[in-house]
Length: 219
Image 1: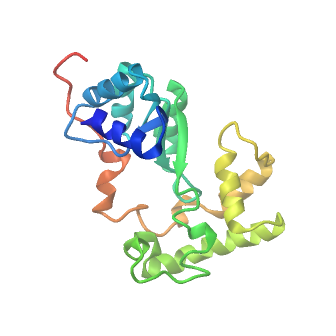
Image 2 (image 1 turned 90 degrees about the vertical axis):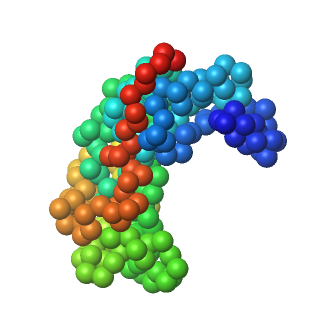
Image 3 (image 1 turned 135 degrees about the horizontal axis):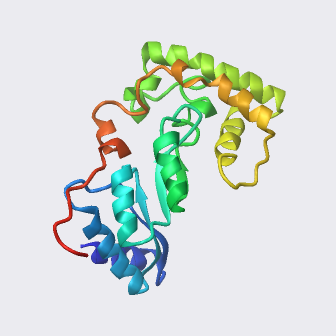
């Protein structure tokens, strides 16, 4: 099935090889060894160059990495989503895996979504814990702090938030260390209202729930 999906992707894109092919969200019903084993075959066939995962748990990442080098993992990372840093980010760096942060603006929050502009009633964010009622009102204080810092550095809140994410690795946006500290202190994690960046149902597709069954066969 994986091969058929990749072939379809190649055909639609009009290319012979995909540079980086992700398993977008871990299938928790299939041992990760089987999934990566199939992706490894696609690399050997020249259909993909590198293999990536999305929102994979530490156990899943380690097991996958044994089968084949994992080049990158997608995971949510922003000023108000930093709980991954100790367990997940450190593991990526231990194994030499690239980090592909998504939602670096906190689902648009640091771009003013829900603060400077109202959310459409049909928006997914209308059911997001951090964009609801009392939580949103509390989180507006965080936006205001970043907005004040943005004026200090003559940039928008969104640029400041992106600069913080980019500065977490070997990137090209230099921010002096004391300024990074000031930015982080403006968004204390304990002040973020909304226990998680997803609602309870959607949280099931994050890395915390991305373990796969044991592998009973050799890949």
